[in-house]
Amino acid sequence: PVTQERAVYQAALDTAITEVKLLEDSTTRAKKQLNAAENELSCLDDAQLNLRTELAKLEDELSESQGRIEEAKKEDLELIEKEKLLASQHSDLVAKAEETKASIQTGNSRSKAVSSILKAACKGAELSKVGIVGRLGDLATVDEKYDVAISTACG
Image (cartoon, rainbow, N blue to C red):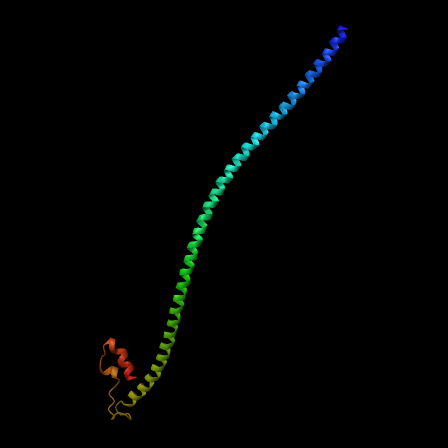
């Protein structure tokens, strides 16, 4: 009877020891999982901090880039206006150049006619007794501010 009773108590003790071991194992596993989760949470917190810092830098860069874009747009508009002005000046200068070229060509043809008349008015030539002395420009000096007016009037 005592042996039997002792076997029952021993079985109950063994069962209790097994249950304690199972509980300790599950507690140990839970602690390990908790530590792993805390480590992962710490890593995620660090990563989040890094990402927030990176986000702040990128937002600053975005702001700077938008400012540069606005400046570039203003400069582009200014350059477009300058280009229009220069194109207008170019057109004016091309027109003046064409006008001057035509004037020079006309002047050259008159110059040939004048040269022929002056040559004919030299001593012994057919117009020597007509009284041609020379070009008006050779006979007198004209102040520069009146030069264009007199040249236009004389033809």
